[in-house]
Length: 72
Picture 1: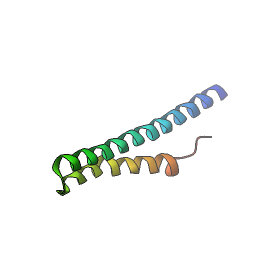
Picture 2: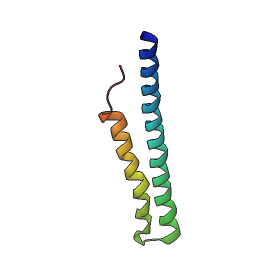
Picture 3: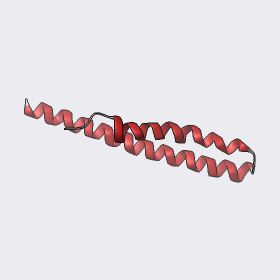
């Protein structure tokens, strides 16, 4: 029984780490997209499209870091 609990804890930890890494990678993609569009278009506010992946993944990071149930 203890082996099953340990395996469940490991899976929960891996899932949380995956959410953290995925959130950071996609946040970087959003920032890169903003920089790219800003340099491509200039002062037009098209570069704000980079906020879509950036802010959605900030929500993922907030959940993974603060709101997800703790792994015991």
